[in-house]
Length: 619
Image (cartoon, one colour):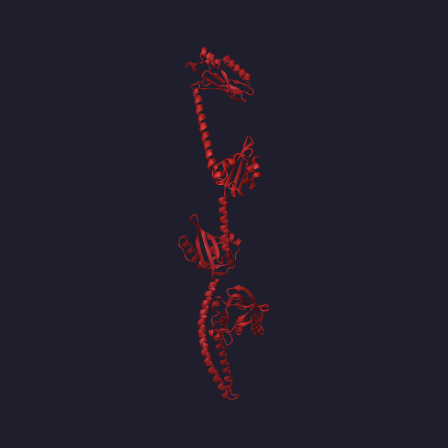
């Protein structure tokens, strides 16, 4: 507004006030007061669209409802309280009129008279606001400078206007100074370009914020690589972007720790999967949370099945579970029981003997589960049984050897006297026939003595290189004529040549085949296979399997079948003597081999003979 407008308003208001008798009649009719009316001066403040109106406030507070106090005389006036008036002014201005010690302010077209006390209150309020504003600025500055992340303030063109000390000290590591940032475009910094963030920062000033996690910086302002969480937010005024704020949170150490943890876990998984023992982890409910490859193979489960939920206690034989729970309780009470033997169940229900040990797994000082090591001791158990069996057989063999030696000596005399008696007996005499039968019995006893010698250490094999294929074929010849028994041979053309005693090996195979045939009195099929196997503890081997369709062997008798004179068949001169498998077992062992028997009642018997070889395949 120009001066002529204000002059016009001042003249109009002065005339209106004097004419209406609203305010100045309340003052004493003195020359001083009349002179004060001539010194009313406008003080424009700012524009408003409201109509002008006013009310009156005296120095000591609001006047009574029907009288107005005169500050000059200290008395009261009985004149009615002036009512507010409004002056409609299109685009009216707010301004103040000063008259003597009074201030008349038109605020949005409403006139208010402020006293000196009111002004002091207003000044105090302004000082308080200013102090709070200063404190707020200091707090925000403190946060800006102490936040452990890089904070940059940007103008509307993307130039850095301020950067906090953390970036200079910890991210740039002092290699880049503050003045090198101020005034430069952030999108043109080498570290920003290398991280592929230039376009993202350009979009920031188009009003598009961003929040990126784990951004890889090939080079930082310190010249090293790193990972950062990067956030950017535009600053707008009246819908126009006037700047932005960018925050870079350095997470390099955290990412490196996560990588190290992942690498450590991967290394643990690889090592655990390379171990021959079962390694698993269980929670406090004894639910499996991890099983290595050996454990999956041992128990026959897939990894998906273990992830769905398998409880470790269910894998232990029901008769051993109470023992396992007691040892777990000891662990929870701080004791350290030694690993113990258990029977565990495979997925197919079969049992496996194991040696199981467990240690608690801790997190924040609390037990959160268990780490368990399980060793399959099937072979150790078998070796122990073999050792006990060998020692027992050795004792029996020494006894048998002595008996066989004494029996042969006695039989030699018997055979001699029988021969003399036959010579003295005349032809056709009945005694001659009796002596012939006695001689047959003596020969049978001599064969038995020879078997006992074979079983004993006196029957050490005479080894020479030969073909095991030919021995197997020769051993089966006498069984091909048996009408009720069929033989099926699956023998490859090429089998390794190795050193063995042909006669003893034929005896061992004949004894096994004889047992198979006698287990099928009504007839059946005997299936014989031979194959090369991979190198084991004794090197390359030949595995020979004899499978029959007989009645099978009761589980309680399996451990006794190699004992001398043990038989489940009826005894007699030709069968049921109980030396066949004992002799076969002794022969195979003396050749460094193994004999394994698997049988179930009603499902036949399978005898597996493994012999070490020391030569190439026969062409």
